[in-house]
Length: 207
Ligand code: GRF
Image 1 (tube, rainbow, N blue to C red):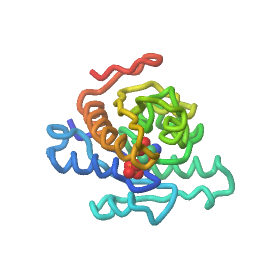
Image 2: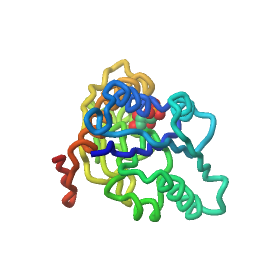
Image 3: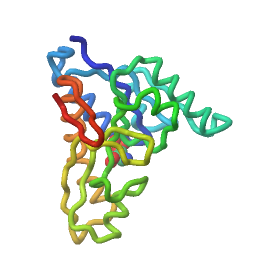
Image 4: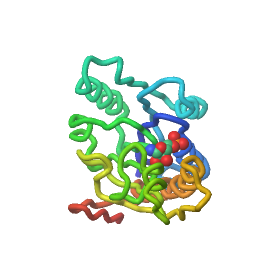
């Protein structure tokens, strides 16, 4: 069985992308190894480390800045087309900071995975780490989930717990979360690719 084709979407440093690239390099051999290959990396902005990581690995990239399009719907259509051009089996949002629209979800729903730096349904949205800290949560963490039409509301695949420390600021806590998140994302994407999965309502079962 051929390795699953992944398109990874990024908006920043791309350390989650790098964790996937490193895992694939460490387990070559297509479906006998990690079970997936990154065929393209997409972003909503240029000049980010995430794109440099892809270029360094010789992986094609595409950039769809929202401001380049007349409307959000046109941006969504362009992002969908750019992603579709690589015929992904799975799309992974790894720090992609835009909410995709209906066309993208219609095209990739059920095979579009996101990683979020909080224990959903707690603290969804763009500031999950800051919100957990401000709330005084004693534990937080990260969630890998399928993306649905809501914001961080799709069926949960896996979660990792991270203790909040008294001395934490947002950056320190987020860095500790990312250590857990990178391992979780690599584990989940590899298992989804190698074993296949079922989504029934809110329940995800990896075969
Ligand atoms: C991750 O923690 C992700 O959950 C959040 O932004 C961070 C991206 O980190 N949305 P990186 O770009 O993968 O280093």
